[in-house]
Image (cartoon, rainbow, N blue to C red; front, side, top):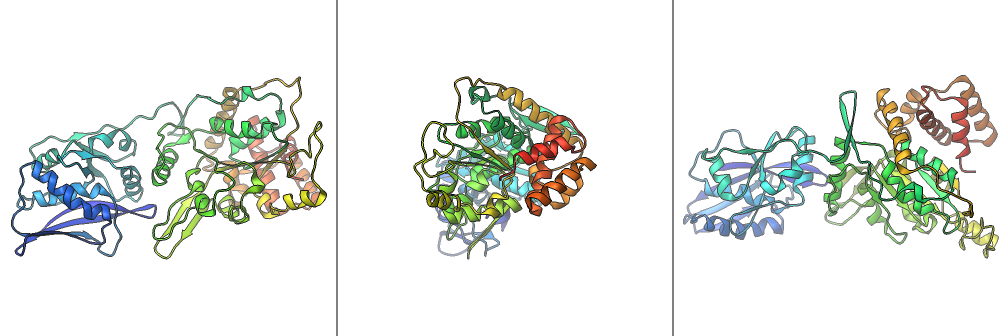
Length: 501
């Protein structure tokens, strides 16, 4: 019996799979057992054609391929290569230490990459289950970005056979390079791009909203923009992506992994994701779901980036209330009978809304057509527990003829990078906006004056513990932008100015 290693995805995690092949007497047949998907069952025809292209003829024996553990559902055409190798080398000794093999076979024996290879190998490496893998050459460029993984690239089934027989010197891929600039802090490397296809220089006026956007980007704080149609809410939200803090390598790889699992085209540039689902989107499309196979949604695809809800109150009530968990715990669990998927949701949440159903309540030029009851019903769609999870609130005024551009995205990005550097240098692992209770107590150190001001605000406005913690986190980011080690009174006052009233 021959044994090679492969793997399959079980939710978001990877599970190692033994590919065992036995040839024994009986009516000639080719059977794959072990709960393989349709793609795996179809691999029998691909394997036969690829082996025939090499001049290999099946012996008149019963061929049984077992994918172990047999009680685990397996999927993916990348099982083609280990299945074909185990059959072709049935009479040839294999190394005692089994290797991982991945690749889909063409009918001529050529190896092809599959979309699941990157998330699969990254999950295996994160679980410390793999050190070396034989993969198709065309997948090397992307897979070589996974740190600590030794990759052996082969072009075809023939090359893989020659490698296992010791007749071919393996091509070992060098570590991949990430485009853009790097920031080295405490022996860690962070990546970013100075590229601004959408620039804040194109936004006239709205200085308070720009300041809130800068604070939101520097600390990954949730942001709510309210104003009449056309004041620039969406313009600011879409430009926010390009001034976010640099990405660590694990964050970048995780974003790519989630994109591939969500059937999205991967982007290996160090630009944080931006997701903007329509307000008619269903709850499963936002948070993930499925019946037999649990799938991730927009909340996972926005991890480490931005999730933007335009027309915030028009989203389904079930979506709005389900949003409270990922905003608070930064994690979502999808539970189904056949699968459970647990994924991170450390995104910057940005929402935009009109002040009333017609949008003209705050307008200086257009009359509001809504009744008090309609306005109240519109506002009641957003619950207080949900709004308490949004740290920054800005009421935007209408543009004026004398409004002019101010800071550019490049200038704002530089401020964000400096605040990011200060945060990492003091040893704080998470952005200020994603700190838990212990993190707030440890990193958000207030001066005595700042403590007094916050205590007075809590007493005067009856602020909850969550809102008080949010003010501390925002003030910590303001202090980082100003280069201050401690949170001072002006920082608390500015944080209080962005509180929802």
